[in-house]
Image (cartoon, rainbow, N blue to C red; front, top):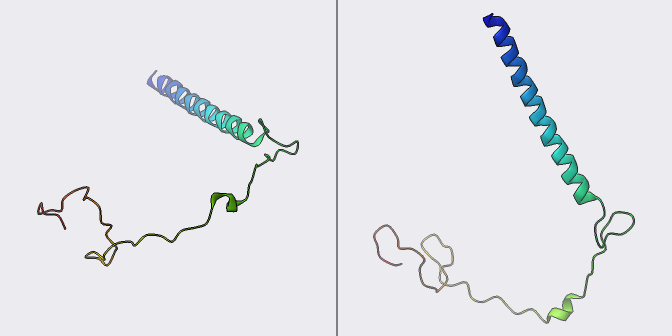
Length: 92
């Protein structure tokens, strides 16, 4: 009797696992097809048409600001308010 119950329990566990795997696989296939198939703005071949413009329309590049003085690990520390104090409670 116990062997029969154990067999049924194992079969239910297997069926639940297989069902869950099938649902996950079906969801993955559906999501993949939704993203690879054409949507609005897609070309007939399936590749979306990109509206690209010239970068010169944004203006000229400006040099980056000074990164700040080097900190204790030779990493630049910006001159801004500290977000947190160090272990001892003092700032810098």
